[in-house]
Image (cartoon, rainbow, N blue to C red; front, side, top):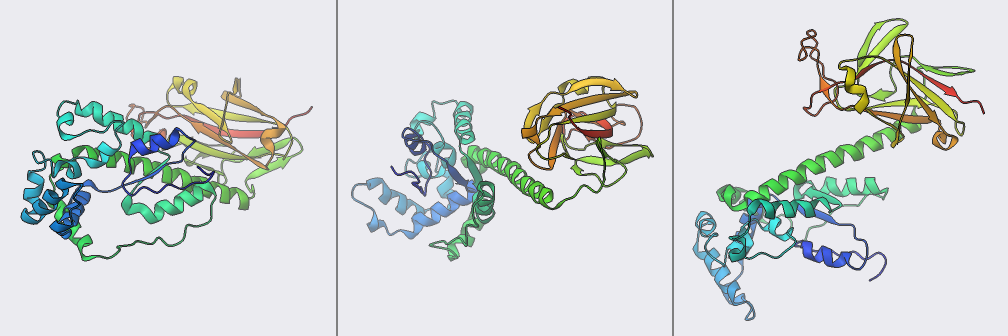
Length: 372
């Protein structure tokens, strides 16, 4: 096998991917299709093939083509559980091909469906890139962006625009959910993972473009360092609007769990960051808060100053190679004051994604060059 082989498999098989991995590292891309539409499309495919085109080495195919021509879409699906000519191509096919073992109709009857599904999900998680087939164009663009490649160009289909494509969409409504229940659950996981990955890729690109073009207009530089003014437009994400009066202006983190704060530094010089924490909705929330500098976990030193909790970070010269650093603050929960019975404020402060919690109010930030 050559160094940059590309193996394109029309009907993906997990077992073939595993075979390739025995020889060298593999980057896997998998597209999943709406299972009801896939079943309807396959039914139309079988109807199109003449019965006499069945190969002598596959006698079962003759029955497959004949049944599809004799039965309506609804009747064909209704017999899928009992007919060996239909079951392999209709019953949860996408989950079955993701399974670690090949399963026929009789063997599946003796399996635990949930254990079978969890095995397919486990294999799904090891695939590098997944998406819904309907997102193909966007998927190709995002793969190029995430890898730093040039745009992929216009996709080409060998059978695009056939009248059967719209017919498959309408016939998909006749496919019972029970026939593809595992595939529907698998596709839901694929779509959720794709949305999260898409958000991550686009956010990273937006941050890089911002860092390339932005100047710190709200950072007051002195001989001893910079002070970030929270009353001015903030160089960060996931912060609520300013509160308080000058000079004591603060912002609550929220509504999501992860906030970014971009701080100016002197390139190639060691530095220290002092983050003043004015308040927190629950006293114990700080102990589970995660801090990162440019994506690397860091542990601050805590102290008390001016009635504030101060989180101090020390940066090496290697960590300040650029003129900015990104301080990420990830909190363990989110909540609002009304939910906690402390007021009428309904804003989610810090964590999001439907989880409880919140974090801190930032009072001020100092970035100081370190003296050797």
